[in-house]
Amino acid sequence: MTHTADSHDTIRVEGARENNLRDVTVELPKRRLTVFTGVSGSGKSSLVFDTIAAESQRMINETYPAFVQGFMPSLGRPDVDRLEGLTTAIIVDQERMGANQRSTVGTATDANALLRRLFSQVGEPHVGSPNAFSFNVPSATGSGMLKVQKGQGKAQAEKAEFHILGGMCPRCEGIGHISDLDLDELYDASLSLSEGPFKIPGYTADGWNVKMIIDTGYFDPKKPIKDYTERELDDFLHRQNTKIKFNGINITYNGLIPSIQRTFLSKDREAMQPHIRAFVDRA
Image (cartoon, rainbow, N blue to C red; front, side, top):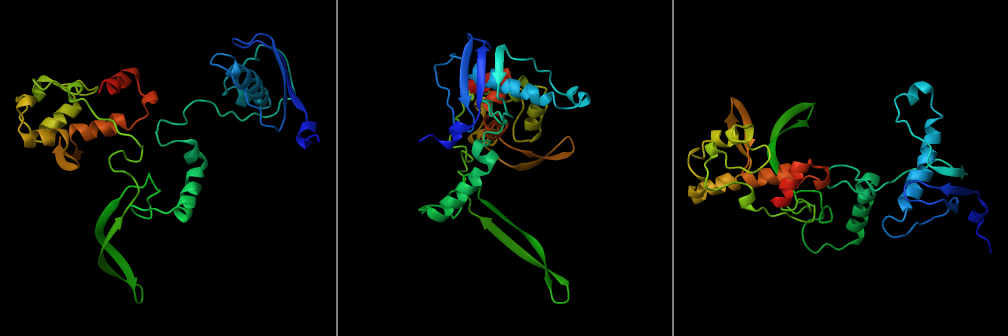
């Protein structure tokens, strides 16, 4: 029995020569799932993206007024003898959707939220909180004063505390993997802060980052790092969320390792500048 979808029109490609294609002719049924498979370089993307989708996009752009087209990229016609039956193409290419490692198909389509609800209702967590499936929800605590409306609209101040037990791993922050650092790739321990010991992009001897470390008052700027006491080395490497005053401004000081993890390792490697990516690969 013939499937109903087979009665629909087809997309016909004749003589496609984009990139490494050599006079390819093919008919594709509409409203059916068609899969192109082959080894790397066989022309899958050249046919799908650079020929069919490119011509569909070019035809759509031509429907806009000339004024609007002036702000759009100029698209040339693909190297093909004939294209028939094209309709609007929605392109989901192989590029990353954003620089954030948490950006996935699930987050972009809200499928993650639906799966989270499914797992929370069907799954049986055996450790952690009810948010155990919420890998991007960190644990949090806080306290403060609240104004509570009581009787005839009068506000009464009350102290309140809250605690949220999330499902995020505090070390990998929900990413699923961690990156350990090679300290020898971060600094030269034989040098002092004033001598510029760092091998980290942006950490020059006269730069803002190094001046801030010196102005904390925790370290002797002329003392080699290898001679730091255990307490000084811990403050230098691991201290977190400490309020200090730098150039008359209140800022938060974090040790070298949490700063590197937040500034470099938590970012998408492919979106980094080449010299930053080289440092991350070494560290």
